[in-house]
Picture 1 (spheres, rainbow, N blue to C red):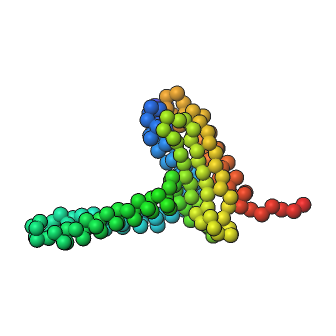
Picture 2: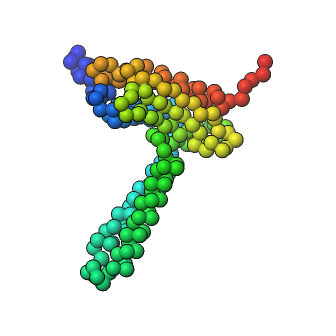
Length: 193
């Protein structure tokens, strides 16, 4: 009986290789997404869907150019058009990543029943060769009148990871929930006494 309890407890443990900073960032980002969605925010996947659609169109253009039924000298103009279209669509995809997505790990809709009309943009940074993890919560539409003030924290990942690479979820959840609370309180009007 005790073996089953310890076996189920070890299955839920989130462990990471401490020498792989990409794996550490991925683990923390996944945990942040879980925390934010557990607070009632629903993920907004519209931008991801646009990127998937654009990627599918790029693949179709590449396949049409590759398997067009005429040989090279005859299909030269068609091939040039396909290559040009491929370059333009790929540039649009990169522009979306650079301008809209940036370091975002999660876009959300506003909370149901909330007076705000904007969701959240949760972004993170973990620079190479650094242990400083920066988590930022911002409004999905910063120009909106109901947009909250951007909040962030920067802390060492050693506060949340043991020397064996196990994530101490309780501490991490507490820090992320405090940041979400700070964001929601910053957007609320102050009460006069």
